[in-house]
Amino acid sequence: MQTGFIGLGAMGIGMAKNVAKAGFLSAVYNRTTEKATALSSELGVWAFDSPQELATHTEVILMCVSADDDVLAMVNAVATTLKPGGIVVDMSTVSMATARQAEAILAERQISFLDAPVSGGVEGAKNGTLVMMLGGQAEVLDKAWPVLESMTARIVHMGACGSGQATKAVNQIMAAGINQAVCEALAFGQKQGLDMDQVVEVISGGAAGNWFLQHRGRTMTKTIFQPGFKLALHHKDLKICQDMAEQSQVNCELTAKTLTQYETLMEQGFGDEDISALYRLFNGHSAL
Ligand code: NAP
Image 1 (tube, rainbow, N blue to C red):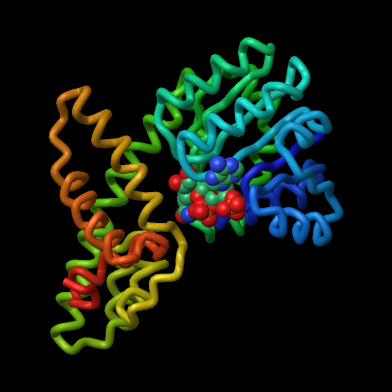
Image 2 (cartoon, rainbow, N blue to C red):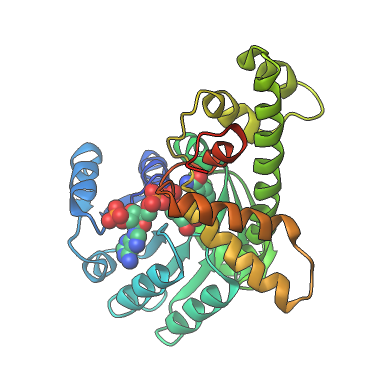
């Protein structure tokens, strides 16, 4: 299956390498061309200058770009040249509405679409251990399965198009709460004069242990906030969650609180830092 990959960012680069390892990757495209040409030389795959060109040479297109408009721009571009019967799988985090719009655009050209957001961070992307929450037709998933399996530890088919993104929204609300809890608790611990590496180690093994604590706890207490997952991207996700919550009349206070705090940090220039930069508001390392 000739597979192309669009979007070689923090997530995409690791995913693309795992698809290559499994023998499926034939081409890459990235808006900033240097990333694509570097990966092309490393892996011996084509690097194309446009998504349209990539689509003429592939049957399956995987994409992982930033936000809703970026996904729709890439979908509109590949729709012009991907052959009927092709499959586009979007692993970006966007709204359900965008996923359904992408499906409709591609359906006009007899091209299938799967919304396939992932969880597991850049570590999961690199190690091929992502969890994928997938929306779309089961028979399309069956066809794409071997390619998707090369990047993931688990794929769960959630239902029709958009249900993958709805599930990811649940994940993103939970991630906001976990970020709040870990930052508050570790800032408290640091003020007690504890050895924070030891705190992270012991708590990670108990009932309060979690992925975020294990992977970001030690760095945040040393004021290192290298992404990871950019705070501005989680802000984009939580805006989607807030809209969905308003439409369904669910009270999401943690989402609202986190959005306000992220906006403060983004105004101070910390939007490209990891989401653990929320710690700045708990330990006083922000301009506040
Ligand atoms: P990132 O490092 O900022 O990379 C974004 C990628 O999208 C880059 O390759 C960028 O190209 C490309 N891009 C953005 N706008 C584009 C456009 N209009 N046209 C073409 N390409 C465009 O972000 P990331 O962390 O990899 O995240 C990518 C997606 O995965 C986001 O939706 C994010 O919410 C989601 N996600 C992230 C994580 C995480 O832990 N980082 C985990 C799960 C899901 P350039 O190189 O030219 O900028």
